[in-house]
Amino acid sequence: MIDIIQHLALQPLAQVTEAVTEVVTKQADTAFNFMEWAFPSGKMEKFQNNPPSLWEVVFAMFFSLALNLGIAQVYRKTYRGTRYSQDYVQTLIVIGVVTTILIMVVSGNGAIAFGMFAAFSVIRFRRNLGQSRDLAFVFLAMAIGMVVGARLWGAAILISTIVCGAIIVLTKINAFAPRRSSHLLNLRMTCDMDFDKLLAPIFDRYTDRVDMMRISSAQAGMMTELRYGLLLKLDVSLPEFMEALHAACGNNRVVLTPVGRDTES
Image (cartoon, rainbow, N blue to C red; front, side, top):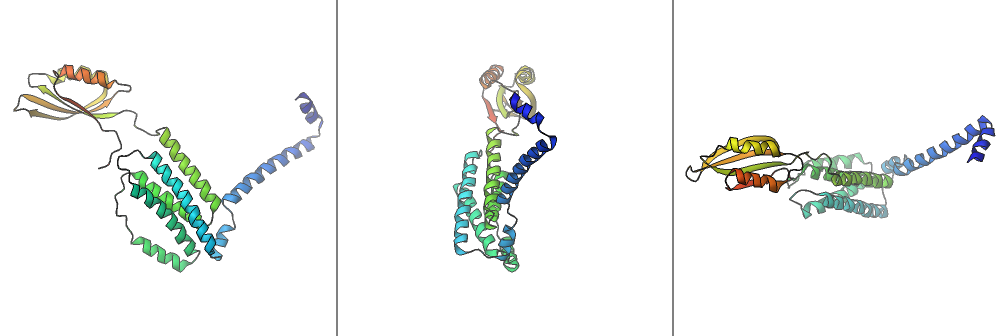
């Protein structure tokens, strides 16, 4: 290492500067070549002026099918709702492949493009999407289909890899999740019990916020039914919380329902 430093020190400044410039230029050329592979500048001109051959259309269909199969697999692995639909996932794949075919058929023809736009304008989804992310996956499948249809093979691989990777990471780390769990509490107490006085210490110990939602009578006026909205503190022991509630209400019915999950009606 010392010999290398001494050798560089004895070299004229101009030669050292030239060597560093050569290394930087090679790295810049490598980055430029990668961008040229992913987003080739001559592709769009070819796309507009040269219609695709039959074998190119077939290859694009299978290429789009492979990428959209990957997108569908990412959707299945990262789904967190309660209404998973096999029909929807298969529709994602079909949408991507069909978009590729339509883009290649248009191939720079303005008249055909306008006709396709008019046809799509009268098509509506016949299924209510359960989550907002379902619509995002539809747009992702269409976008990949369009990029493949434009014959930008490298860009299609790059975009699908980055987007799907980001979705997987956000799902694994549970990004932007609510900080606390929210619950609904239903319990019954006899009419001679002062529920404010009995429940206040428990709520102060286990909850960050309590909202009284409903008070009603039950069992011919012999019981009082209470309904609360709760925000539990972090790391609360639910069995301990339930035991304290049972002791406060005289071992009458207590129902604690989590409401912070992704559910669709």
